[in-house]
Image 1 (cartoon, one colour):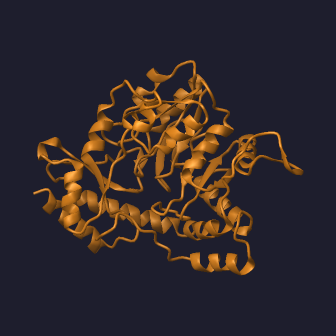
Image 2: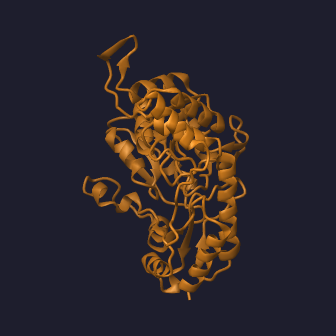
Image 3: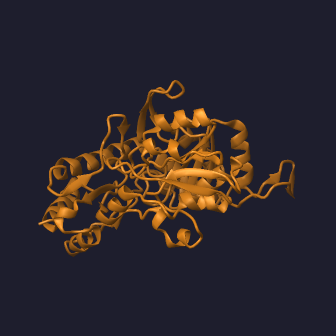
Length: 376
């Protein structure tokens, strides 16, 4: 079975982890935490960085540090992982949903302004499957209405967006646009620590608050005295050691992911009944996952195609289910009562193919042949 994704650990990961074990620095202190934070923030062009235990809590920490709470609203895509909604709900705020762009599958920036109310506090763009959101319209809206931008770049390590905005003009890496930008380092990401995440920012007071809340809000100079309610969202030195070794290889990883994505696109773009994620001129995707959407005229839906591919030795994963279709949210009176037709279509008809950085050209070609056979 060709897996959807496997981590590639071919750098100094073993050496760095062995140092942690040899020296005893295995918990949330040690030289690798700061080294990893600095390396990743530098790669993203950010001044401040706070490593955390996973990408979900990175979002939760960012929402909390920005003071978003009861009665507030945060605009986000419906087509994303539930982590985005959870971060807002746990703060007592309300997620407000936007349908997907039919080409990029990211949130449709053209729909956002109509959803802004007096209670809106932030916009949460999510770069889907390695392709950036169209950020300029969102940055303009955030400036006009005084909103924060919480950028979810969990799936877009190394992806780039070409901005025309004066504050961000030119090509910039994803993770460089939000008041707070959040990453996941789960095992299937371009940079992995097994589990792990980070929040990066250029706002020094916000960074201090992020760092305090991450570590139980200990009072400076008086440990175990608390004037705020924080979280235990710390990353371990062992995880950071793996992460540092991964960042040292990021350029080669991005190059390989793009080569895999281009190979799939060249072979599948002209296959009847199949739509691939659009590649806009203002975006440089990293093809975190290589997805396809089936036209309904094929007579297939995503589960049927997944079963055919599995019988041919190819593993796949279904697309996200929209937040407006999540029973856990609907039962709480959230995210219901509106129509999001693009998100529904791609959720029902979409899946993604093996996309791990360790895939050889021969394995990619085997997946392509299996996909063509499964579609006959």
